[in-house]
Image 1 (cartoon, one colour):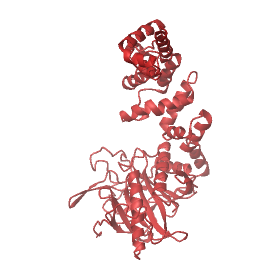
Image 2 (cartoon, helix red, strand yellow; image 1 turned 90 degrees about the vertical axis):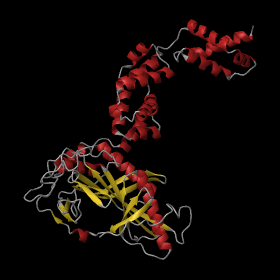
Image 3 (spheres, one colour; image 1 turned 180 degrees about the horizontal axis):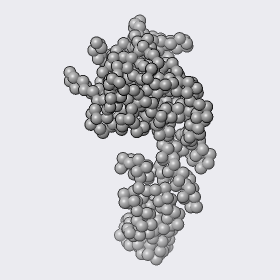
Image 4 (cartoon, helix red, strand yellow; image 1 turned 60 degrees about the horizontal axis):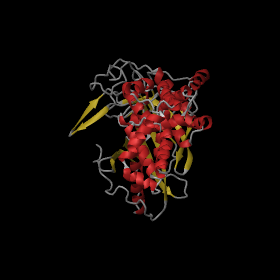
Length: 503
């Protein structure tokens, strides 16, 4: 029986900002479990799209482990795992196999999990991450393929089991113990999530459990090489939880060591409500799982030709794409990283640049995406692939601005209407009567009305307060519903006011 769930302290960051009796270095390794986006489960034909399904409706004799059934390997899951390994610079061995990992938990209907142990699909990779201390390379030990477990729902003294998730393809990506802070661990997870989404193998949704991570945390005296006793921290379902749980666990272990106590190798869970780690179970070792080769599945023997074909399908990854955006389009590094972070946004940007090439520089396109379009996407909780403004539509809007048909103020209004209705920019401009007002005579009449209505600011200007001119420009824009051309309004206003001065 598991021990009670004990909270190991009350203050969340007791030692932050203080000096221990001894200085320690944190040593952190990450294990990330990523559900693979496939239509069916790992070893059967049940639908893997279980998120909104009735509990225990996506099950069959195979994933429920009924007698006399045999598993069949999901080819798409193998391809996705190898593709991920290649993106992480891994070697793809010519021989891999599945193993049975035995432990008697109720979330495994078979009583064991089909996984990979000593001969995984991908080994010896790396991932470069950006941290506050600069760029760091994190070594990837392995990427292996397995099946997910069922979902347990604890309700009072009872636990309910939903087997819809059992058997869904799952990648496990394991690092070496190369990380030394919660900030670096979070940066690693963010970068890895971006790559998985780029590849299309995982949706990156941590809240729904499609991407789950565990941190192995230990401390050692600063300047030493041998590892301390590691503690595995589970239930990390957000970037915030990763940072807080690792910081908390570092402080917990530091307090134990400073008090002359030892750290025990256990599995802890992160309690987000109480803000502390809680004991879950004693840590199992490989011998506890009693691994042995899965007798019902053949080994995997990826040919070099097939691996080369998979490598050829790799998309341009975020870091490389951001560097190209800086080089090819002259973007600022910060803007390039933002635009390259999501594959769909990067492709939208480049499609808009191509469509607007005749009249708008890439930097101008980037400014509109990162500014107004991103604002609308956030306000409407909308992804770029759901946006009703196509790249060509945005390019047309920028063309109207370039032609002087509309000004910057009105163009934002036009974009909002395009975003809502899906109509083209010129259609919105005609329908709403938003064409830019360039007629000098008409603008002069508007200016005269504004000056007559504001005698006090007029006198302030005549007394030498030049800044009042901006007030008058704003009043003219309001009178014309933002349609006045500010490049014409400014000089006309100044001319009218100077004439009054010279009377």
